[in-house]
Length: 298
Image 1 (cartoon, rainbow, N blue to C red):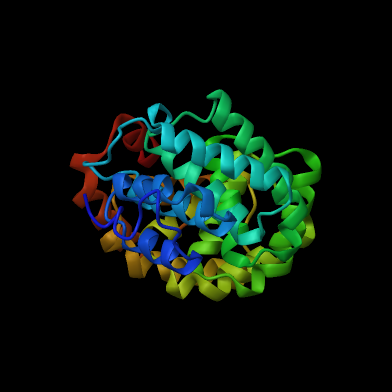
Image 2 (image 1 turned 45 degrees about the horizontal axis):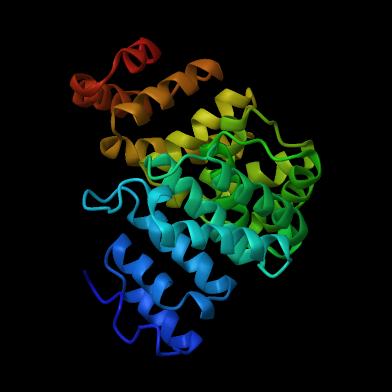
C-alpha cells in the first residue's frame, strides 16, 4: 500500500486540507479506500468527488484491488455518502460532474455495475443534482457529464437533458478539443441530435479546436457527425480534414475505420493528400482490424 493511512486512524481528526492531500498522494485504489475509511466522518462532498475521480483514473490498472468495488464495505459507504450529498443539495457542479464521471469510468472498466441497486440509486440522485447545478458547470464539467451518460448508456430525463443542453450551448466557446470531442461523441452515442442553436455553437467550436485534436478526438468527432447525419460547415470541415491529415499516422484501427466510415456516410470524398495518408494508415493497421472495422473500411 502507498500512503493511504498516513496521518489517519480512528483517534485522529484530520483537517479537510490534509484529507485532500492524502487523497492526492494515493497510488492505488486501496490507498483511496483507506483514506476514505480512516476519515469517513470528516469527508465533505469535495472529498467524495475526489475519491471517485481518483478511482476512475485508476480503474483500468492491472493491480486494481478489490476487483469489484461493490464488495468493499468502505466503497459501499462512499457510494451512500455521494448519494446523500447529491440528494441534499450539498454537491456543487464540479462534485456532481466528477462523481458521475468517476462512476462511468469504473463501470466501463468492469469495477462496478451501473444497474446494481446502490449504484443505480446514486446515479439517480446525481442526475437530479445535475439538473440543479448545470447552470454553474464549466465546459469540462458539461463534457464529462455527457460523456458519462453516453458511456453508461443512460439517457437523462427530459428536464435534466434540457438544462444540460443549455449549459453545453453556454460553455461551447470555452471548450478545448477533448471537451468538444467528448460532447459530440456523447450526443451521437446517445442518439440525441442537438437543437439547431446548440449545433451551431458546437460546429463552430469544432472548427476552432480541430488544430489541437489528437487522433482519437478527430475520429470521435467525424464519427459523431456521421452518426447524427449532420454535415459540418465548410470551414469546420476544412479544419477537420486538415486535422485528419495531421494525425492519421497516429490512428489505431478503430480510429481509421471510424474516419473512413464517417466520410462515406457523410458522402464526402477526402482530398488527394488526405486520401493518401488515410490509405497508408489502413495498410499500417489492417492487421489489427476486427471484422466490423474491415467491413466499415470496405
